[in-house]
Image (cartoon, rainbow, N blue to C red; front, side, top):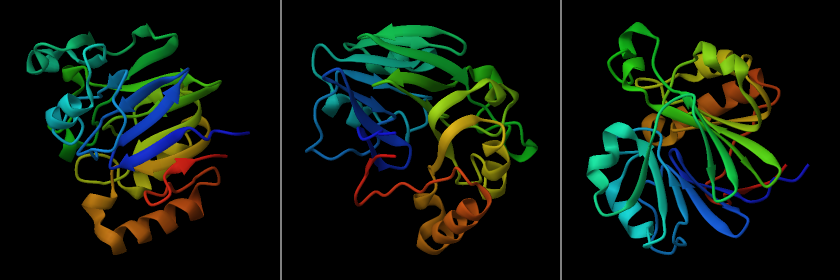
Length: 217
């Protein structure tokens, strides 16, 4: 099964091609060499996901930007659509479904409150389905996710730690699961330890590579 088109740009940021269109998810401090966007999907307004400088640099007049409704005002002059959980969108022929993203662990409830209606995305593209979870804990809605590739935050503090990601991996019907959103937070040694534990416990787990970021399986 081939899945060659998705590229990890670090943290929670990804880019892929869909029918000749360039799509970014949560672009954060992207390089000047990146292609201009046809579509940008943003999960929530925290700066490491909703980075206005990157969004502006990647945008052209025709770029369609999808953000949570509390972020619309920050992108005046752009072609912006506000999103909320449990909606479906047809974007340039690509099916996109929003799912909730929020914290349930007591120590993190103020970081990503459920009431904020922040999102993850399930994207059907190139014959595959990608689940980008945004910033979230393990939540009941995950049991309804079906994906070829699930991207789960593993940094701790603001989202799940490695043990919680391992547990959440059992809730999602995904062919492959990759942790994201952790290397800046855990550092080199902490990241390597978390990756090893994750791979030891999650049979369908993979580790993405920022140095050679195009992924296929």
